[in-house]
Each structure stands twice: as structure tokens, then as C-alpha cells.
Image: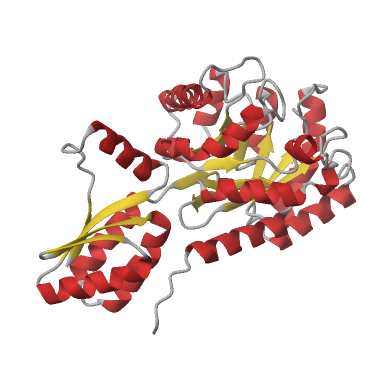
Length: 379
């Protein structure tokens, strides 16, 4: 037996083809055919697939079915356990899984983002960041917070020395920014070498210094807009977080123009000689022309529109101002609404969660993953 993926839409009507494309890219639905050797095996396969609530067409010698990617991995595991001697079946399932695996290669780390989401912790070494400004400005406070985040399960810790919060911010010199973040980078390198280190900066001199120090990730809110940044990153192994921003303009069609932005931005990064396996994208929620306005909610909703780019998508909404605007919540009371919005975005394709609250985000991920894998089969 073997399972093959159906990607031929030549015979579909234009509307059916558009629906297929939306299901395949936005919802990550797989359209598959399980080829069998005889009618008895076909019946067994159809009965097996019914446990995954799949849409099934039971045909002679084969079963055509549709399954979400999240269910496919569990189905493939159970299928190889049920028919372990069928080498062709096992190879075909492994091939489909490999075709839908997305990696993020970031410095010392190769993250299989398809298999495991990334919990990306924030630590702002600033006096004026919107949520935690001023909390971690001493070595003792910094070290304790790093230890708490690592113990809670952070995969990445981002050390930041320049806020870019909405409503205006004070720019500091590269020297001041480095004075703030270098101690935190050194602490992570010395005490927690198994945690990836990120720096959120748009300044070339800061990027140069922290890359010399061996950080794994550069997060640029200006989307690597300077060719000198791209040349610098080309000659490193660091991962890139490239962010869309619209603080200087309004859009006519938000989703379409965001797609154009990311297509152009990724092409520019690739043309500079940087492998796109090193790049993830951030929609830039909170960076709209009207902060915490309707554009932000549109970006929360349309996150799955960017899955076709085949790059991991960051969810970066932790404790942001929508909690204030919608519910009049002070920053210390915005965790519940943050988790609700993150859950929606995680379910729709956000695989890198950039957060202040590591433990609660881990619980979110485990709960949602447990539910989406909840296909019960006796024995």
C-alpha cells in the first residue's frame, strides 16, 4: 500500500480551485489517496480513517480522503504501527510528512517548527518599555528573570535595549543600547547555553556587536531595510525575524498589501544570499497607523493568509494595548485576553509565540495540542 498527495487541480472549476487553494494553504488540509491491493484492505483502511473524522470517498482499490495536517501526523504514526511490515506505506507517509515540515535555522539551533512550536521569551532591559520597562535593570533582577523563564520552558530569550512602543519612544544611542543588553547576553551564554539568544534591534552597529558575540537571532522591526544589514547577516548563521509595519501609512486592502510586502521583503532577503530557512515573519501587530485599532484585529484574524509563504509566523501580541482599548485593562491584568488572542492565532498558524508569560503560554500550547490530537481509538 501507499499514500499519495493529490495536488492536481487542473480539472476543477475556478471556484473549486480557489476553495481547494484556501483549504490547502490557509487551513493546511491535505488531500490524499490511499492505494490498496484488494477490496479487503480498502475496507480496513476506510474503517481506520473513520477514527480521524476524515472526509472519505471509498473507491475500488483506493480511498480518497481529506485530513488536516495536525491529524495527519497522528494518523501516520498509528498507520505505521498497524501495518509495520508495509515498507512502501511507511515510506510514502514519511515523504508526505517531510514535504510539510518547516524548519527555522537560527544560529546554533535548527528548530523543527512543524513538530514543536517555539516559546520565545521577552526580557526588556529598558526603563520605558510598555509592559516591563524598568523591571530588569539590575544584574540581580536580570539573572532571576532569566532563570525563571528558562525554568518555565523558554526556547528563546530575547534581550532588548530599545523600546519601539506605540505613541512615540525615545531613541537611544547604539552605545547605550549595547550597555543595556550585553550583560544579559553574557549571562545567557555562561549559564544557559541550551537557550537561543535573540536581540531586538534595528541599529546596524548593535547588530554588528551582538553577532560578534554569537547571538542566534536578530529581530528587526524595520524588516532589514538597509542593504548593509543584509550583507552583515549573510556572513553569519543568525536567524532573522522580519516584521511588517504600517505606522506611516494606511492600506486600501490590508491582507493583499501585507502579502505584497512579505513577498517583496523575502525576495530581497533571498537575493542578498540569505537562505530563507533562516527567516520567520512577524505581522507587526501594534505597529499600525492607529495603534490598537481595527488593523490589529484584522492581523490577528488573517494570520493564516500568510501560510503560503512557507515560513514560520510569529505571534507577538503579549499584553499589548488591545486589552486596554477593548476592556480598559491595566497592563498587569491583560494576561487572560492575551492568552485568548494567542490561542486563536496559534490555531491558525502562529508557531512562534513571543511572550512575557512563559509558563502560561506553555500551558496554552499543551492544552491546544492535546485537543487537536484528540482522535480516540480503542486499543
